[in-house]
Amino acid sequence: MFLPLLFNSCKKDENEAPILPNEEELITTLVYTLTPVDGGSSVVFSFQDSDGDGGNTPIIIEGILAANTEYTGALSLLNESVDPISDISAEVLEEGTMHQVFYQTESNLDMLIAYSDTDTNGNPIGLLTTISTANISTGTLTITLRHEPTKTANGVSAGNIENAGGETDIEVTFIVEID
Image 1 (cartoon, rainbow, N blue to C red):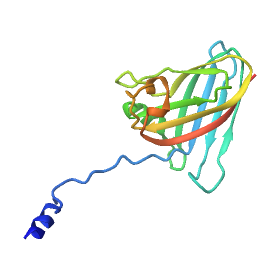
Image 2 (image 1 turned 135 degrees about the horizontal axis):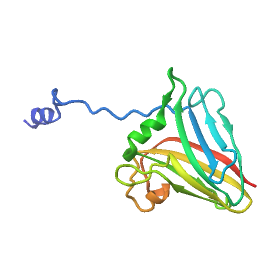
Image 3 (image 1 turned 45 degrees about the vertical axis):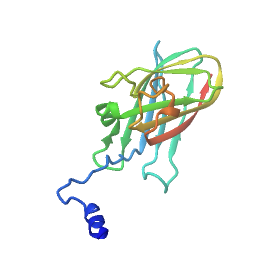
């Protein structure tokens, strides 16, 4: 007597529209350009993995920053596996409330990073930054793009990734030398 009721309650509504997930974009290239505020040559950190995960080893270019210098930072994200090349950073900017870039440094790397751009809710996106270097040091800088982070979680708007949640779209670690 209960079996027909059980089967009917599990029947899917055929008129119900399927839920389509927001597909991740392939990001083959990350370029972080740091330009000294007081003038001088830009320093470029880049990651390029033209075939995506697996396969060929990514090409990573790192740079040396000057001590006691302020830089403006601009992050560019691309998918170079398609023609024409897809500018993922434009999509991140357009969907700003759904993305945030996090910049994590080792404690021995003597630099501070601040967000310079915000989404429509006033929360950081992270495509534009300001960096202030201090003393001579060496360490790592990890750049992580998160899709659908909880931007209102404790510390997230200040760049703390630990409470952010969401899905990682790309994460790259660079060795940074401040000289």
